[in-house]
Image (cartoon, rainbow, N blue to C red; front, side):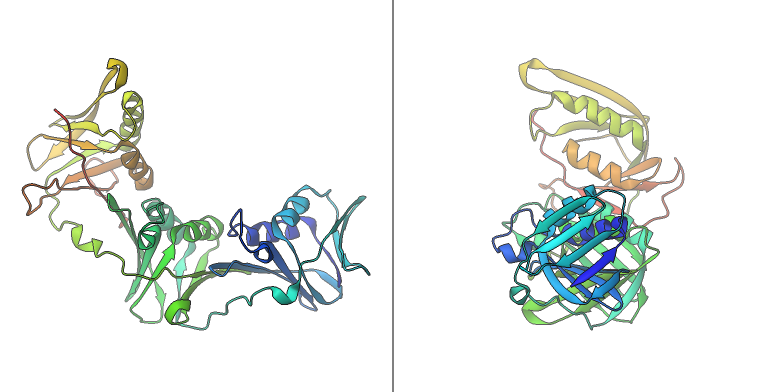
Length: 380
């Protein structure tokens, strides 16, 4: 096999396909990138049985063929080659020669015949706006659990209903939800996608115009595919029942406070500096301000107030995880934020707060982003 390819195009393609590969893989063969060269150019693929990435690029192919080479090493080499065309060829002894200008590398070939088949997707599909989808992933994905003890909570639930695709994530202490337009087959479909994979999809495809989303497979091999331009990412779905968190969102939102988002973020960051690890921050929402109070080790204390407008009810005091709140405020993406105080039928249980965007002091946000955060018990 022998081909020539543009350095920047090739480097970007290799970088894309290796992003989803784990840093350490128990099966060395899965650390490889499969490169297929034919008359139409190159196809580069990576697959670890759970996620795959594939892209096609233009190249001048002198001799068609297929090679498998260590992905991260090839990516590191390609990103540092001089500004000249790259030539890759299989040598007589089976090694893979990479030449660019005066730079030359020889890499070991991995056995192509041992590499697993990249999954093909043939099921129902639809199209979502890439910018909306990328934003939705960023707004929702951070709320998924990072603890593998409960696998279903490490994913983001995608739900297709009519002309809407919903994204939902929770780690038991918070719930994040966002809807985006869905243009496709009128199906009722759900897919629990690993948050790590979906976050990479959002970063990679967020400015692609549109993204095609397809569902395929059955049983233990259900997969979802995301395609934009010449790139495709597939992911094996997480098996299990995602908790019914939608019912936690309140219908009535009359008791709430409106605060400037940036001012609240900065104040929370400052005051929480004295908090012990994992301790909640005390918030007091009154008619014209929200006051934050914190007590930490070594008798350290902090307090700060930010202007706020409270509507529909009395003063509220509660404890919130400051990091969880900061992440939510970063996801709001509006000048102001609305913090709604929900009610519960259980008098012995603290009710979560609902965080949504607010375009201005008087105008609610236009997007569908919702974030529920469970308060913490405050020690007197």
